[in-house]
Each structure stands twice: as C-alpha cells, then as structure tokens.
Length: 387
Ligand SMILES: CC(=O)SCCNC(=O)CCNC(=O)[C@H](O)C(C)(C)COP(=O)(O)OP(=O)(O)OC[C@H]1O[C@@H](n2cnc3c(N)ncnc32)[C@H](O)[C@@H]1OP(=O)(O)O
Ligand SMILES: O=C([O-])CC(=O)C(=O)O
Image 1 (spheres, protein in one colour):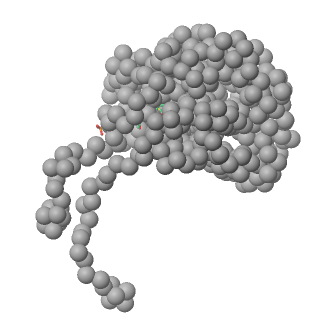
Image 2: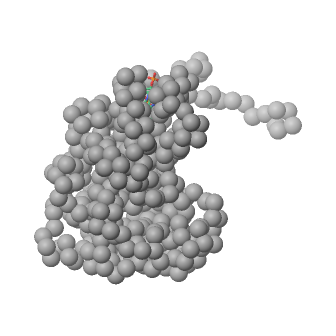
Image 3: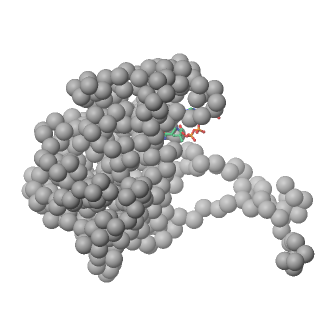
C-alpha cells in the first residue's frame, strides 16, 4: 500500500473487508430462514417440505406477501387478480417478436420487465395495497413474457394467456400451445414453490438495495433478474444442463469428466453454497423428482450421471449439490429448453423479491456500505500528450 495512503487512512476503522459480505446480517426479515448446518429452509414459518407437500405456488405468493397463509376467499381473490393481470402490453409483445432470436432469454426478460413500468400508473401512494397490486401484476406477467419470447424466437404464434387455471398450468400451456397434464402442472408448480424465496441471496440483496433508494418495484425486479442471471447464482441451472450435454457430446465418463475439471480448478455448476454446509433441502426434493421424471421420460442416463457426479463431488472435495443441480434434469425431462431454466427460476423468485421489496419499503434505510480506497492520492496532473 502506498505510504501516503497508509498515512491518511485510519485502518482501525476498517478492521476487515468482508469479501462477498459473507456472514453479514444487513436486514431483518420475516420471509425466510435458512439453517445451513442442518439443511433446513423455512418460508414465513413453514418448512419447505411442508410447503412442497401441501401448498400451491399461489398460496406461497400470498404467504410471502402477507406473512400468513390465505383463507379460501383470500386465495380465490388472489388467483382472480393474478389471472386478470396475465396479459402484457402490445408494445412488449412487439419487442418480444422483433428482438434478436438469438438473445439470451434472461436478457430479454430483464428488458421486458423494465418496459412494463411504462404501462403501470406512476407511484402515487406507496401503501401496502399499491405495492401488492404491483407485485401481483409483475408476477402474473413474467410467465407470459417468457413463453411469448420462446414462441416468437421459434417462429411460432404467440399463445394468449388463459383466464383460468394455475400459474404453472397457464405457463406450460402458453409455452407449448397445448394444455399440460396433471403431472406436468404439479411438477411445474412444485418447482415454483421450491424456488420462491431464499433469504439474502445476491438477487434479493440487489432488489432490496434498489428499493432502499425509494426506486420503484420494476427497477428492483429488473435489477434482481440481472443478478439472478449470473452462473454463480440462478444461471447455474442452465450450466448444469450444458455440462451434462458436454459429457454426452464428448462421450465422456462423468466421474473422469468431473475429476478433470476439478484438477483444472474449474467449478462444477450446481454444487456449493455460501450458507448450506450440507445438502440444500430443495436439492433433496428435486433429486427425487429428477429420478422419477428421468425414468418416466427415458432420460435415466442423465439422472445416473447426476448421481455419479454428486458422489464424485462429495468424495473429492466434500461439496453438496444446491437447488440448481437436479432442477436442470427435471426441466429437461419436461422438454423445456435449457436456456429457459433461469427464467423459470425468476418466474418463481419474483414472489420473494417483491415480498422483500414491500418489507424493505415499510422499514427503509438507504443501503450504503463503504469501500476501502486503496489507490493513489495527490497525483500531479500530466497533460495527455506527455502521458
Ligand atoms: C441458486 C443459487 O444461487 S445456488 C448457487 C448456484 N451457483 C453454482 O452452482 C455455481 C458453482 N458454485 C460456486 O461457484 C460456489 O459454491 C458459490 C458461488 C455458490 C458459493 O461460493 P462461496 O461461498 O463464495 O465459496 P467459494 O466460491 O469461495 O468456494 C470455497 C471453496 O470451495 C470450492 N468450490 C465451491 N464451489 C465449488 C464448485 N461448485 N465446484 C468446485 N469447487 C467449488 C472453491 O473453489 C473454493 O476452494 P478454495 O478454497 O480451494 O479456493
Ligand atoms: O441463497 C443463495 O445464496 C442462493 C440460492 O440458493 C437461492 O437464491 O436460492
């Protein structure tokens, strides 16, 4: 460190730069709790196993927005509101039809969600109901955007959203142009439940930081989509599928493939977690779903490779899978294009992001940490021709 800098900075004020903010508690929340040692996840009081067993995605949305489960009439009202909000403005459809067919779907989703704000009334009163209606509107429109872009890029006619059925059913209907069966709807619904909320992950932190400037919910969700897109976060599910495809194309042995990558100090996507020191409970549930669906759809080899990779990772470096590992083969068995996997994550996580937005807005303080300046000070100006 430069002498001048050492002189000017009182390092005792900055005892430790917490790279990656590991272990820092920046907010309090009622949305979710993670026990990283035990591998437990709770959304607003209910374990992920209880919710996976009993809830629907719509009930989870209500839970994350209100910190309690809905009664029958509240659930029915929420479903009606979500269904009414599914259509997207024609300007957004126009964009989806005319943007590059080679664009990354997550980038398209990010742009389209940002565009939605142009068609929503400007924030007048920022009360809870106003926020809730916005959360409902964004949550309802994201599946429509994803399905419409996928069809447009494949030169297929865009399918209008249905005015009934669940979020999961309607999404699969709009994506495939035909009504899904009960099992496909249930599988998609379960995936949405499992991905809805997860504490102060990178995208939720981004979303809360944007909210803390008193910016609007569309900005927060747009920023969160950008954060989720990265391969160290939600983008890992697509990378898991790319890895399995790569093993297939190379006709490689999955164990040797993983050992080779570890030797070259490359990360294996879908493994490791900042908080879990054991298997992610969502991965445990998705593992069973992946086994069942892979066998039913004739993709058991992919499941068997996944199990071989899991064992190798545990034996070689003691790292367990996260939510993104088995979700990849679940979506693959459902015939979904790998580059939509992270969009489906966003379609679910928007419920958690908007729940956190409301929580932040109701008890706000600007997010504004510090950085330790380690550059030079007091440099003399050198004219451009002399540099
Ligand atoms: C929905 C989600 O966002 S879940 C996470 C999805 N992301 C992934 O699956 C990407 C792969 N995993 C990772 O990159 C990491 O495990 C993260 C980013 C998720 C967590 O990262 P951190 O808590 O910062 O741990 P960090 O990356 O520092 O890893 C610690 C050590 O474990 C190793 N490690 C962690 N994950 C992996 C992995 N997937 N493959 C190989 N090695 C790994 C690191 O190389 C590092 O080793 P070192 O100490 O010898 O350098
Ligand atoms: O919590 C995290 O760090 C990432 C994650 O698993 C998620 O967002 O679901």
